[in-house]
Length: 288
Ligand code: NAP
Image (tube, rainbow, N blue to C red):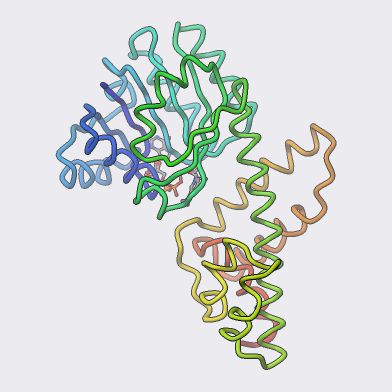
């Protein structure tokens, strides 16, 4: 397929590489051109200097940029040149309202828009093992599905446009609560003078087990916080969650509190640390 791909960062760079390895014709575009050029040198793919350039002739236009405004800019520009019938697939984590607006814009040009945020992190993008939660027209998703399978282990259709983003919000609510609980558990174990490795061995096969425990317990205990998904991104996501919760009248006391804890991590200089750095905030308090 002929594919335009905007946003060649931590996630988008490896995703677009998988598409090239699967034999697709990809034109990459990135705000900072130097990053796109380096990506093109590594992959042998073509690069465009504008979204319009990446959109020309694209049957599929995939995005993985930063936030709502970035998506708006790229989609507006790409819609100037993409052929009628092009399917936009947006892997950026955004508001559900943005997705609905993009659905209307794309529809007015005879195109389709699928909001398709992902989970699985940097490792998932590099290993082609992402989980995709998608909202939009089922037929449009079916056209994109064989392409997205190049970097996904699961693609779930959630309903109309916007419902992929709502599902991603549920994912982030789960992560916020679990990571804070784990950070407190590591902190408590250390304050109690326990051997944290032995604690993991004792409790990680029972009801306390979680992906976060298996993958972040030891690194939290060692104070290592460099695993890809930055605190700045998490605060963006929790902001989207809390806005949506206000609109749909849900009660997210814990999520709101953890959002504030992340603001403290940012103030400690941890904006680019990963989400498990909630542990750093507690270590800071106990002088570790
Ligand atoms: P990233 O490394 O900062 O990559 C974003 C890329 O998009 C950058 O290369 C950036 O260009 C480019 N970009 C941003 N705005 C643009 C615009 N207006 N026009 C063109 N290119 C633009 O971020 P990431 O970690 O890949 O995350 C991307 C999205 O995926 C975010 O919404 C994030 O919340 C979500 N996500 C991330 C992860 C993760 O583990 N990292 C997991 C799930 C979801 P520059 O080079 O100019 O900065």
